Image (cartoon, rainbow, N blue to C red; front, side, top):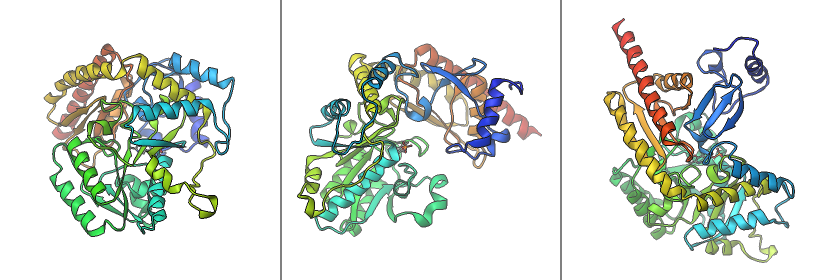
Length: 443
Ligand SMILES: *Cc1c(COP(=O)(O)O)cnc(C)c1O
């Protein structure tokens, strides 16, 4: 694709000589997957060193909301940079985080009372699991088990992996993981069996279960499995009646992704812990937060000698630069009618995508808010998603499918023209793909 002595090729070589990339079989970079040095990014586009543009259809792993190098967020970050970058967050505090916490709590149901910060999604899950367990322990309840959904993904540290169930991430580490109880994953309106299995688990084990962890409405890394708000509502009610805490992982589905500001707001129930990250800084800097109730907070609030403090900490907790970005993100939500505009854009994309139904192998075309997905059916064990990814790159699309599930999770600043280009390109890609497949079967 590129000449050998270009700056790009040199960077690629230098990279591979010293870097081990995440979520990658590095061997794939020999032939299957290119490694693309990016020189700059603007709006929905990444630009390589030959100035080729790649439309970021996946919001750079679901973190970007308002485009790369967003002028407003960048300005706010630069402003913050000149007064305070980062300080120890125990015994000291700062304005950006106080403002952010008040604004987040205001956006949430009044049931929530406190924000506990960390610096990535997996850590937020660890915090929530530990807090739930610890809250039970303080109440002299010996509860050391968690319930999660089959096909769940909550991050990749050991605790977070334990409440996950996506084989490629968990399998090898199984001997290290906490024992968890799994509920059959709901799918669409198909959730009666899931509720039944949850009910059975709760009846048998509620005395041992600290919390139920789930991603409301969409299991994102679980191949964009979308399911009914009714399931969430019923499941949460069951847990709360059984005295089991509920942890909502809104790391991917929060900040407007599913249509409402937070996904739980479509479900008519409120969890005991809400984990947020990814979109929180608009894709600028790592930050996560676990939001919980005053009721839970007060369990830990006691004289030092009672040893009830929650001593979890990360060095970069409450980073002021990240908080400044998060406040800028909330400003944009307030200023730009983001949710209303997304609803219109979402309908537009959804209508356009219907053209894909003409391909027999496009299965289970689905959407929820600003998430769109379909599966390449009938290719079990074949890396067809990878072929779509590579064909996408040639047309200037950054797609990065989940196995054979192709999805769009674009930044909210995507224009209708850009959306149309994505869909038209997908049609062309899937056509090549059909031809290739047809040729292969003919031989
Ligand atoms: C990405 C993600 C996580 C983990 O967040 P990291 O910042 O990658 O550790 C956890 N839960 C969900 C639902 C996610 O999408």
